[in-house]
Length: 281
Image 1 (cartoon, one colour):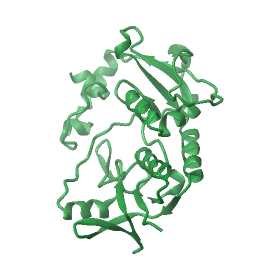
Image 2 (cartoon, helix red, strand yellow; image 1 turned 90 degrees about the vertical axis):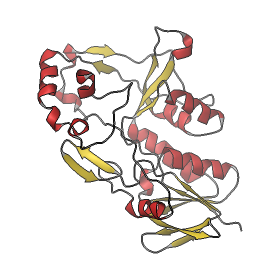
Image 3 (cartoon, helix red, strand yellow; image 1 turned 180 degrees about the vertical axis):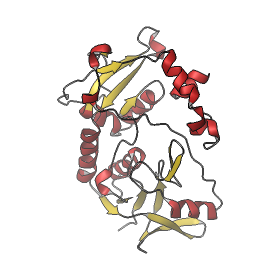
C-alpha cells in the first residue's frame, strides 16, 4: 500500500486538498486538532465577492466542494455591483455557519480513502531534503508520500481585542507554535495576514424598524454548476449608517485602535477598511 498524503489543517483549503487527493484515489490523512470543526467558517460567514467569487467558481469547475457547500447553506444571495457592467458584477452569499460546517464534515466523512486524524502537527521529518513524515504533539509520527500545509491563520496566530493580545488561531482555539518554529528552523519565512472581524450583534437587541432592509436577491446564485439542493429559508440583511456623532466617538478613541497605536504593524485592506480607517482616510 502506498504512503498517504498528509494534509495539515481542516479549513477550506485543507478540505479541498483532502477531497482532491481522494478523487485521485490516493490514501490521504487529514490531521486536525478538532475533527468536529472541519470547514468551520472563522470570520464573516460569507462566500464570494469580487475577488473570491471567481475563485469559488474555479474551484467548482475543478470538482471542488466550496460552491456546493455554499449553495446548501446559503441564507442570502446578492449580486454585487449590479448597477455596473457585467464584467464587474459578482455573486456573494451569506451562509448559515453550522449548516456549512455540517455539510463539509459529512462530505469528508463519506469520501473514500480519507482518514481524519485528531492531533496537532508540530514537526516535520526530512530525508534527503524531502519531507517523509509529520510529528504530532503527543509524539506520534505519520509517514507521508507528501505533506500539504493548510494552516490558515493558525501559524503563530495572534488575536487582537482592542489593546489586548491573545495567541490564537481563531477565537477560542490555540495557535500552531511548534509547526511555525519548525518552518523557521528549515529556513522558511513565516508571516501573518491581517484580517478584521466585526462584533457579533444579538438580533433581539436591535431595532430593525429604523434600518433599511436588504432582502435576498432571487436572481443571484447558485454558485455551483452542479447544485441540485433544496435551499434554506432566505434571510434579510439590515443596513445602518454612521453620523457625525459616531465619527467623533471613533476619532476620540483612535488611541485604542491597534492599527493606529502601532500594536499591529501593517496597513488595512484598501477596499474593505475598518470603520476607523474609513473615518481617518
